[in-house]
Amino acid sequence: METAEFRDRLNDRLDHDAYAGVDASANGLQIGSADGTVERAAFAVDGVEATVREAADVDADVLVVHHGLVWGGLDRVTGPEYDRIASCVESDVALYVSHLPLDGHDELGNAAGLASFLGCERREPFGEYDGVTIGQRARLDTPRSVEGLRKRLSELDTGGQPIRTLGFGPETIEDVAIVTGSGTDWIREAADAGADALVTGEGKQKAYHEAREAGLNVLMAGHYATETFGVRRLRDLVDGWGIETAYVDHPTGL
Image (cartoon, rainbow, N blue to C red; front, side):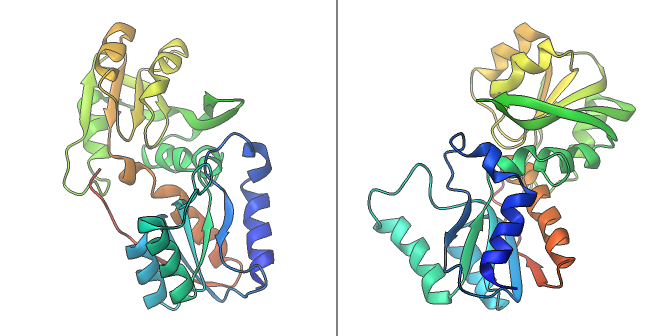
């Protein structure tokens, strides 16, 4: 498949146009020529030297990631930025990125994948961010206790780190708001929506008091661990296009 077609298919499927002007990430093809071809694609959460090298090791033509290299533009291509870009160029591995679109997509997104992992068939968009949504509000098919939900989340690849829990909400959890990555800014929205818990990756110091005052359970399972779902689902999608695929797992424990 031509790289341009590969790019355009993903852009369209992930509705990148809806996030244009909102996302600080430069989504789409960040590094590489659209005139190339894609016979094998690798998928990873982060676009960094380590994952580019691993993509090259499996002879990938493109690395598809959630976290790319360009955030709000590049002033200089020096230091770590140079090293990361050079790793792509020297390995002849193109880099394709989808950030917020891959968080909020109803089917392929990180939040949708985490909702399915938790056993939620009924779900809807959640987490308003500058006119778009980046999460999911979901109803557990089988209610869980706070401890039961924590145990389920501990099955994720957290790099051995515990699930951080702020247990300020009801003991029985049925309604869950999900914003993967760094999502504690949505504590108030989750509480106002009537959720019993907010599930996210990592938090900020102020989250403790906000959760306590809102009467909401907040469970933080790690930024990386909550954001593997989207790229894995994209891999499944691309498999169906007749392209060989590989997943590059590089957990951070954060």
